[in-house]
Length: 424
Picture (cartoon, rainbow, N blue to C red):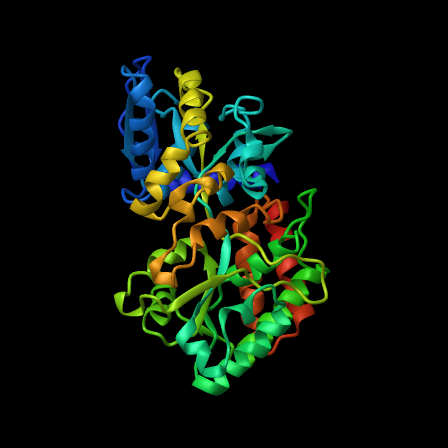
């Protein structure tokens, strides 16, 4: 398996050989270099953290280098594979679903944080992304907890309120979606065709994934996955879900009112609230669970975490900085929430006034406080090293099933494809 990973990474390096790495960091003992992306979200949060830490450490310097994820990933792979690490930063932001791959291929590249950061203060599911060989390697950041968001004015036409969608099963959600479609002509939700995000967060709500705890492919014979695919197929054929071409089309269905709601990660709030005309017309609740399989009404979609490079000459300072900000500052999360909508997975943040404040766009509902509570109930799963490959294979399988292929045949083909990739 590791051979396949290394060969794949070599191919990535050759494809991106022209990409230059971010500038070499300063090596002043009071300076921390950070690579991350998105000025209005991750970079903003890191800069606020730097300002908070600097109050008690006036000599501290934070150098945040804007580094798009693709550039960060390929630059990091190139440096680690070549053993040329002098230009690497002290801290990087890592996509959660890529973390296990990096920890597997480069097991000595990241500083273990076990007993150095209190992981018990974070949502348990987020902590597991950075767990390898009994050690923790990441400080969780943004929250990908899922929720059901509904247009109260649209569902009211079917005689429904948000309470009707609370603590329900997927089977009941389909019934309610049919009621809404019959009353309004609208699908309940939309999703991007050939993507498996909906099925993926259904799986996590039952504490399972495309791989088992030992890292073996768990597609064929996965009863939870099979049931998720059945329910998804029912929603598509009943018109409860409408599949769209791409992400922009998905957001458009939400913004133009052509669907009655959406089920997504909490980060979708930024897209929802971008339409002033819909002010006060939205409400939020938890997601459906399986009716016949042990599961909960909580799951996750997306997110990222901070990691300290083991090659950092200022590793102790980097850990102290993270400990006193992202793993220890209520003020940080209270400040960045209204500025960027960055919802924490650090559980004490739920006690801040900013999280408890009513959100006028959602009719005065304290959506941020509720999302923190949702996050504490998300089941733990192991994404596995070949997570992207498994998702692509299952996505193709679902497309084939909708076109008429049997569920078992399509999932068997997906399993065989992933196993072939692992064996290379």
